[in-house]
Length: 376
Image (spheres, rainbow, N blue to C red):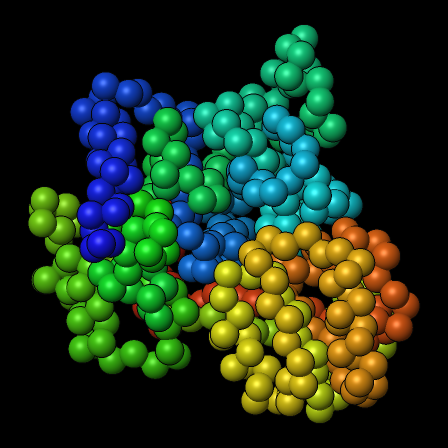
């Protein structure tokens, strides 16, 4: 049976849902302050967290945002806490979700919160005094002390139609073009490909470090922008909407020890045991493969909660090559720290690989910053 026929009910539901919101039958509200949505139409793997961090770096270093308190709101995927919660640097990944905790540790001056109800989450971030009220659902909020947000970055909220963002940024993986993908369960699309036209900005992520104008224009053409000009990063959709398309790459930074008792000398080992719980570890494997011989690799599901059995497997692999280092991703590190029972022999050898998203050119970065500055 053809996949298009099998996914037809899912496609019909998506079309009906978007129709109801587009026609105003179902209502969308704004947050009352500028909001930046960083989302995608695929199931993971496009780099939302590194790009959220990239936007935070740009905002925090721009003097025009100096008096604006910035907040990040996420649903906190796979967290065990309930309702609205503010995340601290000392939270556990099980309480906050791994990605919000990673962001908070990198940007302690930013309020990072989780709430599956994004409308209420934005309302509480802009009016924190409401948490002091008598509503029962606010009592479970552990940390109620934070300044009112003047700008909110919404993590993975493009499909959350109840909330209308000021700026919709959609990420598309260079290595897995949307026009060559299919809806779940036959592909990785969780939303209709034509929804890309509703984005204000498309960022093509995980690109090669060098792209010529023909490659950029060809990719933008496949996204539905036949008149895309790389000099202005602008094209026109079929409906006549102007849309900006930028290209970024992912780089890995100097490895860092994961535990206080980790021995930095293992970073310089020539052999490596790699374990990850992310959507796609291929870029990381290629990067590490230039420096290390990966003697064994463990690939767990995205957002995997590590168990004692997992570390027994990792320990056996490490015992077969005693000089090998143990490496994981920055996101996985939050859940490793959560586990709390990692054997001392593994702690000594364990380190994490920080990740960073950057634009392919300074011109693209300047143009993107102008878009951010237009929000205030």
